[in-house]
Structures are given as C-alpha cells and as structure tokens.
Image (cartoon, rainbow, N blue to C red; front, side, top):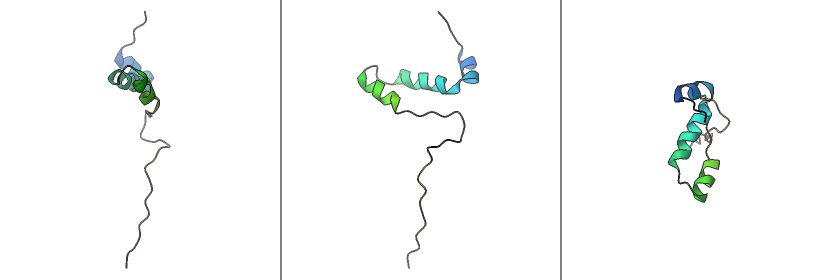
Length: 60
C-alpha cells in the first residue's frame, strides 16, 4: 500500500486533499456520491464561479 502524508498532499495537490476530506464526511451511499459530484474546490482565491453581480437601482 501507498501512504501519503497530509503535508505532502497539501503541498502537491491541495484540491485532492480537500476533496478526500469532504468525501469522508458525506454519507457513503448513492446520495453521498451525488453530493460529491456537486462540490467545486479551487486552490486559490480566483475562480470562474463568481457571485451574482447586482446592479444599483436609484429609487426616486
């Protein structure tokens, strides 16, 4: 078997480390498998899934 320490995994592939942590917290059945497919993890602060961009309306 192959073991990788958390420190090495976080330095090489932080997305995978977080995905495995989240996967361990979910239920281990069909629902959990559906839920893990909806999770999106990004290593940095920048990503393409930005929040909505509201426009300011002036009320007179």
